[in-house]
Image (cartoon, rainbow, N blue to C red; front, side, top):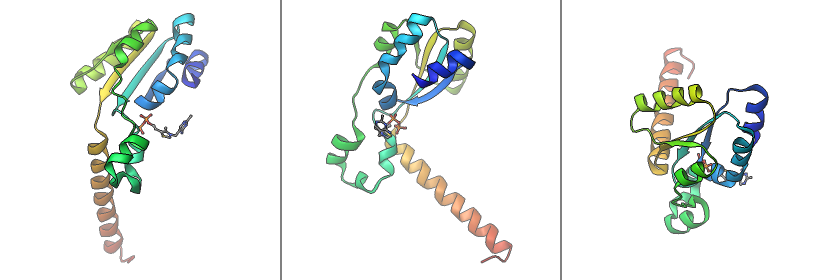
Amino acid sequence: SSALGAGAAAGPLALVIGDVSLYHDLNGLLAAKMHGLQATIVLLNNNGGGIFSFLPQARHEGPFETLFGTPTGLSFSDAVGMYGGRHATPRTWDEFRRQVAESFEAGGLHVVEVRTSRAENVQMHRFLWERVSQEIAKFLEHKGMV
Ligand SMILES: Cc1ncc(C[n+]2csc(CCOP(=O)(O)OP(=O)(O)O)c2C)c(N)n1
């Protein structure tokens, strides 16, 4: 809803949002329908709250999924259609770029849904953090700072 307000005042709008957050304020899309607002929403759908996978309790898989992961398995395409929006699910980055570009040309409400994995996301972040730490350590050593 906040993004739609900002977009109405100073669009064009591109909003990147997670599935839990979009679901939380789904009815805010009524404003887009009733006022014919332009909104390109990139939905990162990892079927739950991915941010919580970075917390220590993520090790306790069963209760973690119930209390923090909260996978809903919702299909957003019907919901987007209910508000008069167009829903797209790109399979490649080329498709993604084309669908986003076309959504701006067409105007109105568009949701471009990208499916991701919470488990892969946390692994990828840990891998990158480790690599960045190694590179910084090498740099500091090279400069004689450690
Ligand atoms: C109004 C509100 N309710 C609950 C929270 C707690 N909260 C923080 S992140 C999060 C889950 C976000 O999930 P999602 O939008 O799918 O993004 P992801 O973490 O997967 O990137 C929740 C429920 C919050 N910040 N604000």
